[in-house]
Length: 351
Image (cartoon, rainbow, N blue to C red; front, side):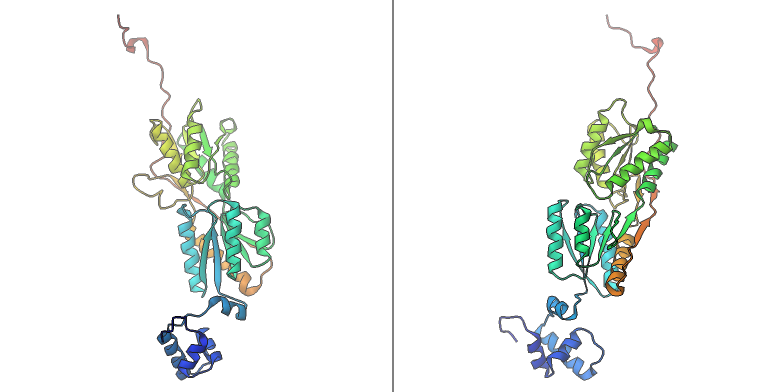
């Protein structure tokens, strides 16, 4: 049947010799249809190339079985594993995933969420959104919302987040165990969870009796942010002997700045990232970093969302995951302070 238009459910019904309502039941997977009629309807669907209108079905059923996902930055490999976890869990529960991004711009995030809501998603998972909490709450008045990567405080919003304070403490303790005192931090700027990670670093430094050594370079969750933050820190005197970057992308940017300055990690300065993305494990980087169970985070976010969608749960749930430190090749004891040469070893003055 080639008519230059998409086949409709009426076309399928006529082709199969059954009613429109029966085709609708078959397409929805309803079990109350005889095998003969089901086979006839499915054969007609295949022969005509019929594709159900998900939005129209959603209007009738009040559900589309689609989960909307917003991620703040598609360039960050952290989200690739989170999305993989979301996809796997959603698929196992009979849901599809529709994804959008705001490219780290609040206004674009608002527009992205509005698009997902217009497409009638059953719920939203927001991956490290940059937007204000009030905007998240506003979205939660329309559909269930789960926030990933930053804490949520509204009763209408669930969250899955990493224990940033514990992760920062593990980093500082590791550096101190190697003999470092001048441990600096490149923060994540306005990124989700950046404030918690920075506060975790500062508290960890105080716990280790290093309050006077607290130094923070302004950065972002990007290579450019890490580069700029590291440039700022490398100009300090005395220079830090260890740098803790807010995430792995920022750590890569910091490494570029370190090498550009004629220094090496870890020979001259130790470097630690956060997230344990695939980049950190690459042999030529071998970055010491903090591991977050990214795939599990995605799956947990779906579980929380479906609980709200199916069960109507009202009380909020806050899942906080414990991070672990992964030690690789970018951390080592600090370089020895070079003592001035004794008179016997000084080069003779030229005449």
